[in-house]
Amino acid sequence: MTASMSCVGGWGELLLWGLMATLAMSAVMHGSQGLGLSRLSLSFLAGTMFTGNRDRAAVLGFFIYVLGGWVFAILYALIFCSAGSASWLFGGFLGLVHGTLLLVVLLPLVPHVHPRVLTVYHGPTATRHLEPPGFLGLNYGYRTPLTTLLSQTLYGVVLGVGLNIS
Image (cartoon, rainbow, N blue to C red; front, side, top):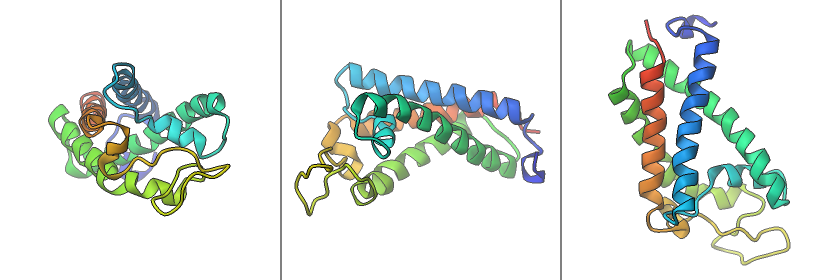
């Protein structure tokens, strides 16, 4: 473990709670899709970066999403260590900030880096046929910002509760 991560209980703890937080976040995101609250699937968007096969993209995207969840768990742990504490409230705040950045900054950039997402400048092509998320992900439903913020906040809460920072 690196010196900057020495305040976390260990890599096993970090991987476990990163997985738990990612699964909780995924449950909210996929649940909101099932309930018709949003059409946003970050794991599907991740998978379609690498394959045009929608079935494979769903599975591949989930594993990419779990890996990303672990990367973000490390970043959250670094922030918790730097602050000297972790709590559900602090984790939830970080998740809310994370979700806001995702909605305001990252989702609008997706069409410019994703090989299968339409841009505002070009219509559908043989390879670009996925709808762009738009600002706040509103192209995927007007409740998308709410469900995204809820899921990202839950991610932070789970990490804030689970990680032992000393």
